Image 1 (tube, one colour):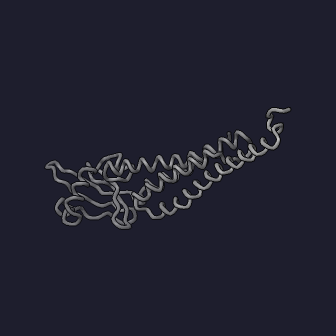
Image 2 (tube, rainbow, N blue to C red):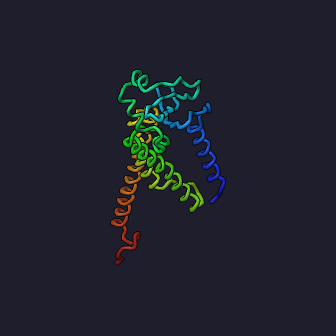
Image 3 (cartoon, helix red, strand yellow):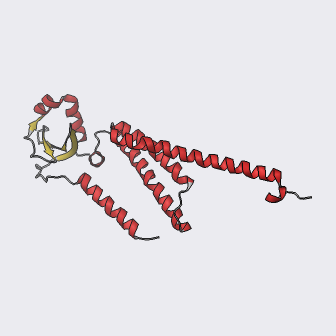
Length: 213
């Protein structure tokens, strides 16, 4: 198996990770600050949360493409975003898992893991196709490729629907139907071939090694 495709995959993965997690602007955070990813409308960035010795919180938004906001006290933050958002920000700030997965609660974390599982299965189908093709020394698409594609597509459809990501949802719709159709065509061909063999055997038993007179 050639090493170049694997190296290209790893390089592309590294580029994607850097684009997703590498902020556009580097900020000097305040001492003791904890960060969590946020999105307000079309604006993305991080929420800097600091707890002082008295137990009071203050906040600052570190935007990806503009200067950081001024520092907000707890009351100012509640006044703008409400008490529920404030409690959520206090509870999730500094949670490494939430920060990496870009979620605010454990339900969201589970959904991200579901989406990750679907994406791994989606990538795995190509590894299956690649392995079979290398083994036979020709381009081959095995039936397992279509089954894996259909399962992964269904999982990703559910994940993107939860994310309310219309681009992701639309990207899976046609694929799921095509994958299912290919599985059906494969099984129809098998049944058709079986009928042809049975017909040939009935017409000439010698053709299939049947009893001869």
